[in-house]
Image (cartoon, rainbow, N blue to C red; front, top):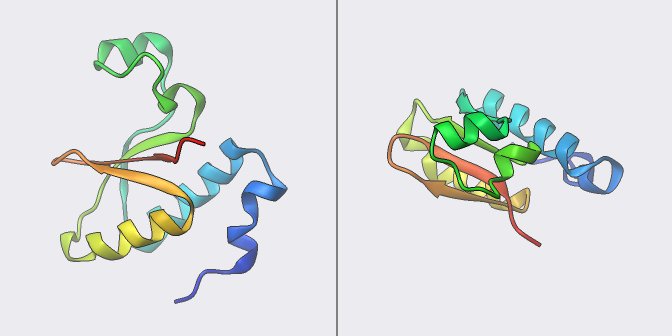
Length: 100
């Protein structure tokens, strides 16, 4: 399945937060992702040991669980297409916008 050029143009049309949210929903649907952490308050971020400048605080990061590990390579490729980065934390994958 190819990715629509309109989907790739989202950061031009909308804010980074809205674009990230739409991308995350797209990836969730395509890969049946379970989102375990998304937007955090400063208190919750501190409680879970998050970085002081975590992109979770601005709605530009999410932690997800991929039920079908055989699809991890494809998921990571899609994340790159959307100019995001992924960190495999073992029990989940942290997704965030690449820092510009």
